[in-house]
Length: 209
Image 1 (cartoon, rainbow, N blue to C red):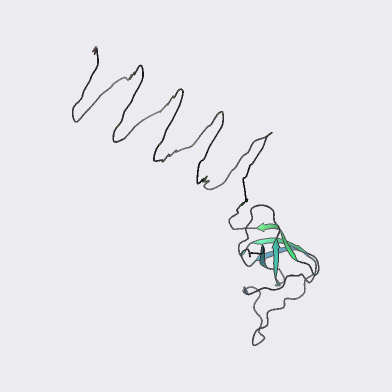
Image 2 (tube, rainbow, N blue to C red):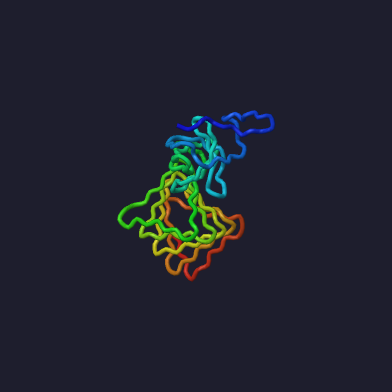
């Protein structure tokens, strides 16, 4: 397997402990073939390499060759592979703790022409756009225990609208206006209209009873 760990030599020739050393790592080529776990000891460098510590205590640089969204975090356990006197490559993630990020330089399309797309998470999910968010579908269903909408202005355009409320329906606003082009019907088992000021009824004909 790998050779013994050769610590950096400093002024007095003292070695650094393999568990705590996080200094510069210059070893880029493996002294022997290896396929197995390693511990991440640094964040991602500009050259897409990270510092890793092998089980025998040897510190090396490794190129991250994991397809997908993985961003290394210190303390993660990764799967590395190498041949003798070759670069070390990270080819898998055994235990990760960091934020996974998917970055593309241009447009991104997820297409499933013959199937469904399902996204699940145990925590919160957020959709964020700096310009506009469009949802286009012949049918849209929202199911939630509680639904909250917050906006500076809301505009709705519908052919027909039906709203069923099991218990209380309350609308609170500074002013309220309802405009209909034809009929306006209010039907209730009991009804009451109350005003702290003037109450005006204006119509061509007013029928009571």
